[in-house]
Structure formats: structure tokens, C-alpha cells
Image 1 (cartoon, rainbow, N blue to C red):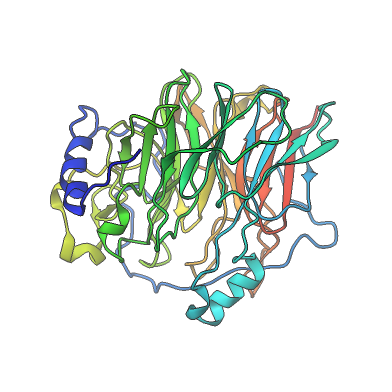
Image 2 (cartoon, rainbow, N blue to C red):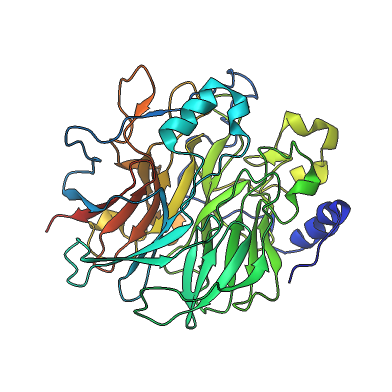
Length: 440
């Protein structure tokens, strides 16, 4: 299990280990200049930090998400309870984690937070995994099963070596599993305890294995916005952890990632990429969320710096110039406050060639910006394993354009691929999974 470390140990010994890697000061180079590159960022507080929670109206009068010409959008599933994440098994079974932010003390923040609670369903977590089976592969599942219940804010899922793994907020849990099972038996075995204490702002725990299947990577977001509750709350947080499939051998693979959620391997490479939610309350245009290749041993700034070596003024009393100097600039800006969560590389053949090996990112959408940002799925083209262009809109229509009341129809989260090359997108406030397929 996990050996606890002191705050001093966390800041000194862990960070010194992280930076001993020979490649930790070299970011993966992109052939495209990010929209908000390192020399174009505004200063902190150039605009007022605004709480602007969206008002969810749902998909009314037959409205649907909008894909580019040549694609069709259909409903794959509905009637779920806050579907957040998807894992697709080798046989095509689709596993959906239904989980949510738990209410706790949010009501004390007043009317604006209350609007968020009412319209975005914060407060109750189904703590369930539902499984769908589409045996004839026509894009409409014939069977639906309650695959697992009584979990604890489940998120990431993984099938490996006759085991089904679940990333609960407080543990990596391992169950016995064989292909075709429609229900998990037993309570499972917690093989890695994960931090989920009093301050657990970022509760999602995504998981992924490497190509060899001998390591599991666990994304653990920070407990707070910018360590305002103390660094002692952030031990083993804002990290991607690496463990063996039995839970042993834990080490920090990369750190300083405020809230890494989506993870995937760029096709044809051994490079892990992640979509990261950056910090809030520095203004409308700070700080950009980003997509980045993850360097083993790399440090990405949080909480001391952002987007490279920009010092966070809120950390001036605890500043670490040594860490700021080693902070890696990420590869691709995804826009400020977009809540970029989902990530999948397109390694199928059904979509047009321009999408081959590129990255799709699900943007859940902003709350800390005067004008809403995100609320869509974007695409980043790749060439030879590196970004080769700017993010472009792929699936829109979630935001009600021109609304004076910040209205949205839905909020995309996860993006996943079916064996036939079509894409699934979770919409966690309309409780729907959308399917995007290329026209034949």
C-alpha cells in the first residue's frame, strides 16, 4: 500500500526525484503555435474573475449536437444518471461510469452556486457502472445491464489480465472479470488508496494501461484550486501515478498537473498525452487548459507556476523559483476555463483521412468566465505523433448561441471510439450518450 510522506518530503524529496530525469526539461515540440502561446498570455487579473454558471435547458424541439458535413449524430443511450466516462471492451461492450460531484458544503456560496446545483444536478452520485451491448453493431444497443453498484464516485475503467479495474475517487479497485460478463461480483479489492479527504475538488480518477499491459497510470487532480488549503492537502495529487497491475511499485510519473483527466497514447508512439484543467480565478483568459505529451518525471507548474514559467501571484508567500524554472510549457492550448476533460486519439479508419491519428477532446464548459467557453468537442490534428494544427470545432450545438442567460443544452465529457470507428460522447447533464458516425 501507500507510504505516507510529510509535506516537506513531498516538496523536496519527491520533486527532486521528478527532476532527475534527463528529459524533464524538454517539452515535446509541436509544429503548430498554440493559440495562447507562452508569449501571448495576459497578465493576472487583467479581467475580473467572474462566476457565470450555465443554465441547462436540455435538448428541446428535436435539437441535436452538430457535427461537420459528412457525419451523422444519433442517440446511443439515454435515461442515465450523470454519465461521465466510457470504457469500450475488446468485444465491443460499452461500460459507462455514472457519478457526480457530491454536494457537501456548496450551498454556502449562495445563489449562483445554487443555480449550478439545480441545473447541473450536483449533489447526488449514482455510483454505478452501466453496460451496453450492441450485438449487431448497428449503433443501437439491444441490451443494458447494471454492471456494478455501490461504488464511490467511479470514473476511469480498465480491463487487464482477467481483471476489471475501477478508479473510485478514494481507491483503485480490482475485480475478477472475464470477457462477456454482464455483472461484477463481490466488492472488489482496493489495491491502491487514493487521496480523497476533506478537500476533494477534483474527484475524478481516470486510469489507463501502457501498451505492454505491465503498468497502470492513475490521474489524480488537485484537492483545491491553487493549494489554498495548504500543501499538506496535495500530497499525491496533481499527479499522474504509475503502479503495477497488482497495485505495487507506485511512483509519480509526472507532477504539477492541476487536474489531468483524459489520457491516451498517441498512435505509433510510446508517448502518453493528457488533457488538463488549469486553475481558476485569475481572469477570463487565464489559465488556458491544455493538451500535452507527458514526460516521465516532468513537472508542469502547479501550483507555483502556470503554462510554463508564469508565476502564480497567489503563491508569492510559498514560491519555489527552483520549480518554476523547471516548469514545462504544455504543447497545445485548449482555451481558458473550457474544462477540457475527454481525450481520445482517432486510430480507426471510418472517419475521413484528416482525422487519422488526431486527438478529440471533450470540453465540459466554463463557469469562471464572463462569456461561456468550451461546451463542445474539439479536434487537434496530429502528424508523426505531434500536433500539426490548431484545435478546431468538431461537435457543437451544446451551447445556445446568442443566449443572454448563459443557456446550454448539454455538457460533453468523455469521447470514446467503438470498434466500427464511430465515436461516443457522454453528455452528463442531459443524461445522454451521443454517437457520431461518418456517412458511407
